[in-house]
Amino acid sequence: PILLDIGAPLVVAMWGGKGVQQTQWGNGGKGSWGGKDSWSGGKGWGKDSWGGGGKGWDSGKGGKGWDMGKGKGKKGKKDRGPSGPNLPRARVSTEPVTGEVAEWKGKYGWIKPTVPIDHPMATKNQGNIYVSMTDLQGGVQALTPGSLCQFHVFSDSSGLGAEEVIGS
Image (cartoon, rainbow, N blue to C red; front, side):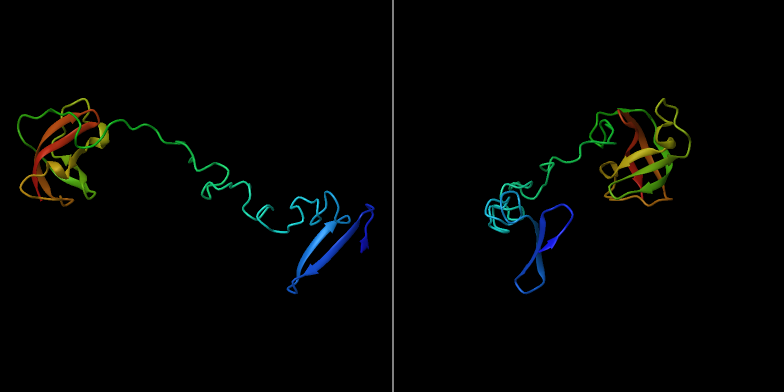
């Protein structure tokens, strides 16, 4: 044993022949590491010890840890309100309007009207008009950015949109 200034012997033991060491203070009694009355009950790394899957911090909850898998909340997520192609609509235009496809994102896109629309919500979305693939006519599934199209303008709770769109 090696004696230190604190008065208790430090014992370094090796077992298993692979260089694994156990360091303990005291003589294996109550409160020491590895003794019969120690935290692990003298059972080493068994099921009732720290690493053995007993009633530890995970406690059988499927590996979700301290927060019990409850997620991180809604930090930074602001309520965007209703959106999408199925909102109630009110038609704004009486005659078809023309515009250029600004961008297409797979199932929806944005059209820049040739002549700005006279409506209180026209400045929303940088003056662009929302278009859904469900509003495309003639079997067209997508619009090509830069191409011209013809459509009617509607308004809903999220802004202006295009319906009955003819284009490519």
